[in-house]
View 1 (cartoon, rainbow, N blue to C red):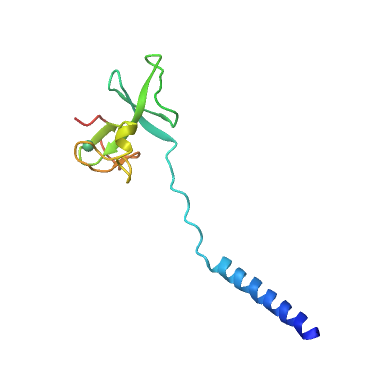
View 2: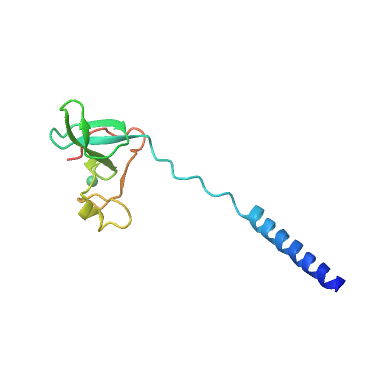
Length: 120
Ligand SMILES: [Zn+2]
């Protein structure tokens, strides 16, 4: 039964080799999408825009002392910032939040040179 041992050994070696080739042959996983540490917020009371570290919303507006800050998202078509759509509206946007006026996708980070003001 010496031959059987060699067959098993060879099969195992082949298996390891195949696994190793698969493993090395895979392209490196793409790096996770970089989420900006600082995001824009709109105050629901004053409509003022501000920036701050990412946190649960509504976040505390230090100027008012109340939790009035909701995330602001940039709309390239309106050239300005919108409030994050409410959760029930977002549930109908499987591709991510879109502008409720123009249906343009809303993004967290505005392109270079974009105005830092609320879209009207
Ligand atoms: Zn818009």
